[in-house]
Each structure stands twice: as C-alpha cells, then as structure tokens.
Length: 173
Image (cartoon, rainbow, N blue to C red; front, side, top):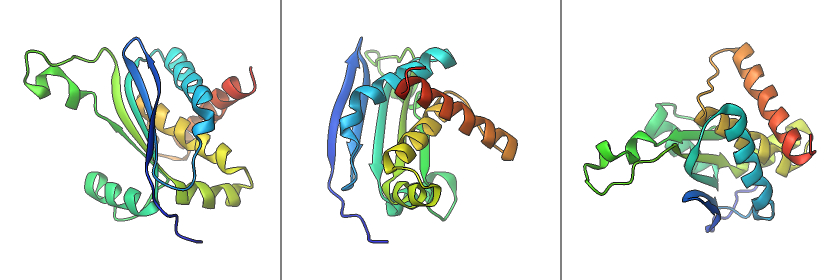
C-alpha cells in the first residue's frame, strides 16, 4: 500500500452551547463533507448513552502516528486503527489549578483514526472507506462513553451497537 502524504486541515464543525466538535484531517483522505452527519452521530450517541460531550477532537492521521501514540500511552508497540483518549480529568479545574479554569460539564476527548487502516480495512471488509471511517469513529465515541471490550463477546457488542447508531443517523431509522 502506498504511504499517505500528510497535510493537516482542521475545522470546527459544531460549536453549540460552548460544546465543540473539531475535525482534523492529517492525510489525503478526508471526510469533511460529512460534517453535519458526524455532528448528528455524536449527538445521537450522547442522547442514547446519556452522556454529554463538551469538547471532542477527531483526528484522521496515519499508522505511524497511531503506533507512536499506542506505544507512548498504551505500552503497545504496534499500530492500531483507532485510539480514544478521555481527557476530561486533564481539563478539570483541579488539574489546571486555576481559579478561572473552565470546568467541563461533560466529556472532553480525542479520537485518533488511522487513514491507512481505514483504507486497508475497507478493502478487507469490502466496504467504502467512508463506511469504515464511520465505524471506527463510532467505536471511539462508544469508548468515550465508557464502553470497553476485553473479550470477543464485548467486542461484538460494541461493534453491533456502533453499527446500530450509524444506521439510525445515516438511514433515518
């Protein structure tokens, strides 16, 4: 597979009630045409999971960056398709030690998705890259909402739940 050439484009796609969703595409692969649907997907998952996401950065990058993050923060010396970081505690008033620190009402997080994995896995699963991107984004969102998967059963549950959310938003169910 050819290496993706990195460029970086960021865009705030939602800033409703001081709740921010920002998309960053650090690859030639970009899904910025889905901005409105991504906001709808995030808000649908919030409602269904009874969570509030205050600040969310969604970063589409490459295998090299995911491998670096995976090694640095998870002690896994390999790449992965998606990494989720719940940064809520890092941005709380207690951590910032400031009287004027903004205390988030909800979750602050980052979701990193490998464009290399999006391309490879979409070919493997015989789906469009956009569908694989949405699957990985939803997986990351569910992790932010507290979902985990330690075995095949819990992994299957998170995948099914994510697929249902995507269908609700993109098929109008």
